[in-house]
Image (cartoon, rainbow, N blue to C red; front, side, top):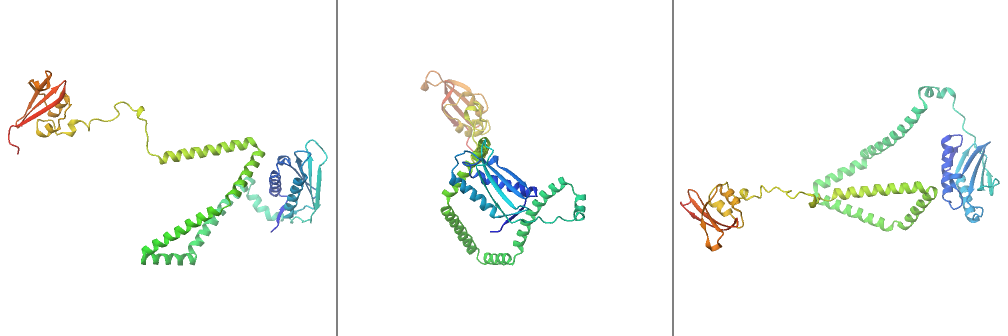
Length: 347
């Protein structure tokens, strides 16, 4: 494995070393308090002080932790460091519970550049501008790498040859091209199903559970707040998705009693223009009121008498035009019978 070289005189390298060792200690939350780890670098000696949670620490667990630290430093090349020491303290005690250390090969720091080599850049740039330009340059480099890779894929002779082959096959045999696409899609789907079946879901779930447990052990309140926020965002997204996919809905109880327009369902729209004719006669239905019949026929009728067949309250009303005469019998203002007589022959 390639060794990583760190110059502890550099602030970023020093912070990186502290972050890595703190994360390493957080994997042993039952043994040490990772947030109380102290670092010191003086006279080419790197000192690390860990705080034990209890004085009766598990020796096997402690040996495993020190071996992890030793393996980590074996992969490092620390510039300007000749010795590494790590100590374990119990809370409330000044003397170390356990102290270990070792000497390492001293790697001299690289010689600094001449002052005149940096004069032009220092005079032209400020620290704030350097920080902004560094972030912008990182973003531009990533975008540039993606553009270059995409451009290289487009101009690749293999890509061009494959495009030509596919176009010729599609022109000559469109059905065969569609079959090839279908077969390729089925193969990709089968590969996906096989990956889902062979993926170590149990191991992955256990690792995620351990990560969540360590995160809760580090800062319980912060972890709970983050979990609540994540669940809230997921619930809002799910509700939004359900609402967008579902059809329109409304509460009938909140609508007014006459929330629909009865104009187009009125008899005068289903019938012809108001007039005494055969079309409007056919449009008359049993149960209609007198005012509805008069509205359809366009004029008031002429009472003729009482129809004894339907009782003492049955009134016969007549309408007459130039070619048609019709009678309607009403009982309690409801149409119960009708009749017509053609006065002239229909055209």
